[in-house]
Each structure stands twice: as structure tokens, then as C-alpha cells.
Image (cartoon, rainbow, N blue to C red; front, side):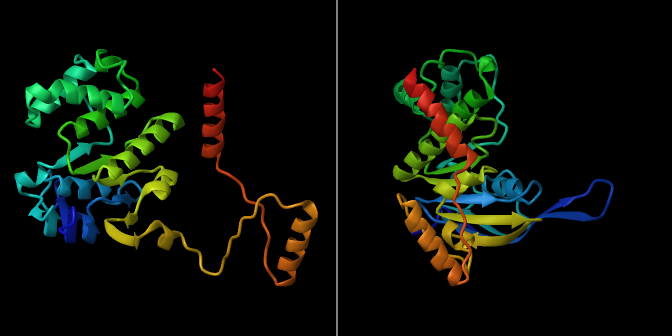
Length: 281
């Protein structure tokens, strides 16, 4: 099956103003995003992620190499018909309501008016904005803007979603909700290219991950293969008595092993406490 995205030897250079020199933003990048998967594209600021995304979207022309979306060149406008995009910092017309905004993007995407109203209602509910659809976008919080941005990316029911920091500025509860939605979209058969600095999110939901640095691909593979730490083993056993634990620790130390106490993340604790408070209310 033709992959959702196929990048081979991609190069993108930018001319430096008032100079003959060029800046290479993407340097011989090759990667493949299979259909129906969640693919994480990681890297520090300036690593070439955004430039790569813009080439995939046809917003920039490659200086070298190839980039295909569903088997078509990313420079072909028809390749973008099945793509939805949420930029890192979406900007929307503040005077429009959330519903009007989705109507506008639906019109741009060729959505028939007869089915637009039902589709918009479904999307507002899906992203948790069913009670805010008739409010002006200018009154939305950062988290609500990310949610309505996700809804506009889904308006035409695309096969491929490109999400650039979809949880930026969103509180942990909202981030968890968006993460759950991304998993649901994968279950519906959609392909997601995800850029995120929230590494716990990437680790939890991505099938494969690419890590970029200075325009180059540093590592690529499954999360398990990238996080495997050779020479270290971990076994979790719950409900041990103090005596049994002491015996196991003694045996491990006799074999030259190091024993440590596992801990949970602050994010897990925060979500647990916040949800407990919500249940009580």
C-alpha cells in the first residue's frame, strides 16, 4: 500500500538576505509514514521540523529530493485534498463564532452546505466545544483555540492529519482529552503526523518516531526500540510483604544488581488528583 507520506533525500535551503550563502534547514532527510499510524516528528527548535511539514503541505518547494503524499508529489495541489492541518499557533478571525469558523473552512474545503450543519455539530461535540460553538472565537482561551483548530483540521474528514503542537498552552486535563481524541482518530483509520514537545504524549501514542537535529534525521524507529536501554532489566511486582521484598533485594545485590524504587510522573499524579476532584463534585 502506498504510504501516507514518503520523503526521500529531502533538502531545503534558504537564501540568507544580503549574502550569497545559503542556510540548509533540512539535510538529506528520508522517512516514511505508513497509513493508519501515528508518527511522531521530534526535535528542538530549529531542527527542521516545521520546514519539513511545510514541504509536505506544499507551502515550500524542496531544494532537492522528493516528498510524496499518498503517492503524489507534495507540489501537486491534488495531494493536499485529503490532508488536514493544525499549525502550532493558529490564527482565526476573532469576530467569527466557532460555528461560523467551521462553516467558513468547510466552504473552503468543498463541504456541501446540506451536510455542513450536522458535520459541524459532530465536530464541536468531538472536541468538547458543543457549549461554545456560538461564542466568538475572540473570547476563546488558548486551549479552546487549539480545540477549534483541531475541529477545522477535521472539517473535510481528511485521511491524513498533520498536527503541530496540538496541546501547546493546554492544561493537563485538556491535553489528556486531545491525546484521547488522537487515539480515536487513529482507530477511525486516519494517519496522524504529530509534532509535540510533550514527550510523554509521544511515547504513549506514537507507533514510530523520528528525531531531528540541525536538519538531519538523528534516530528513527518504534518508541520501544528507541527507548530500549541495553544492559538494564526492570521487573514490577506489586503487593510484596516487607520480608519478601528484603529477600529479593538481598538476592539481587548478591548478583551485583542495583535495586531502585519506581516512581510515577508528576503528570500522572496531577491527572489523578484533578479527576478525583471532578468525581467528588
